[in-house]
Image (tube, rainbow, N blue to C red; front, side, top):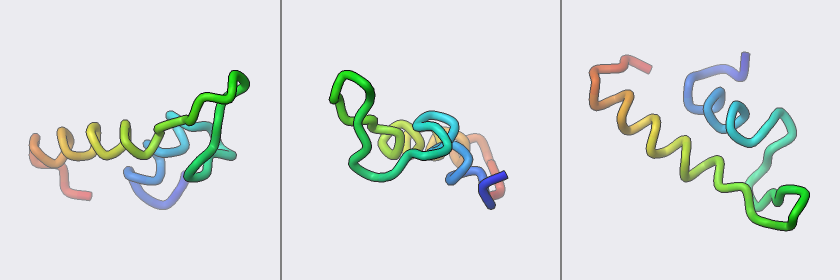
Length: 50
């Protein structure tokens, strides 16, 4: 839906309107990119192709 697995992870965790520096309704930064990095690294570690 967002072009690739990595972008899909960013938006899955941060929402469709997520952008770097976005904050949640309590003003906390949404670290979707950090979470996506960790998941993506794990995925690649298991032999993921994308």
